[in-house]
Amino acid sequence: MLKPVPRQSLSDAVFDQLRGQILSGQLAPGAALPSERELCKLLDVNRGAVREALKRLHEARLVKVQHGGATRVLDFLDTAGSDLLADLLFTADGTIDMRIARSVLEMRAALAPDIAQLCARRGGATTAAVLASLVRAMEAARGDTATMHRLTFDYWDALVQGADNVAYRLIFNSLRRSRAKWQDALAHVFVEELHDVPAYRAIAKAVAAGDADTARRRAARMVQPGVERLTRLVDLIEQSRKKR
Image (cartoon, rainbow, N blue to C red; front, side):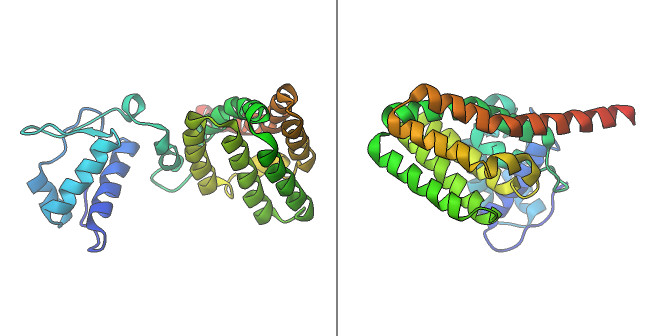
């Protein structure tokens, strides 16, 4: 189950290995981790690396460290935060967990309209100018998928900043990191939204006009196709598994 780690960045390597086993379920909630001494021997690392890794696992709310007692695995679904989404997206064999991907898109679809609406109320002329500039860049980059990915990230970044909501900002950071890891594998899910320049232009104009209702409506319309497409894909996969 455990294996020696490379000599470089020992605490990172220990942390990554233990976290991977917790997220995959190999270390189940309630399970006790080996003692620090045992971990040092199993992983062929020094105690400082083990202690630093355990500290990070505790800070991520993946384990509970009991001084003088065993360190036990927590149920991360009850204790962890959205920063784990990017790590949960991929299974141990490197494939995408489609249920997690669907969850991410559903959350994004719920938040995006509200972000656009708040941006129209609070963003002001500065945000409107940034959005307008990005739309012009999108128009010039039609057909260039890599550039469009970057521009749409920047566009939503500007919307979130304009919304002036710290909670949305932190969640957006997690979503952005997640999407950056699987945008290529699920490019077909985002293809319609990615190249929908008229929708980006409409939202930008609504923000410039302070039209919160239109901004919300157009954002909801733009992100919904991706959710529907991925939901259909997940349903097909689950149906296929049931037939086996």
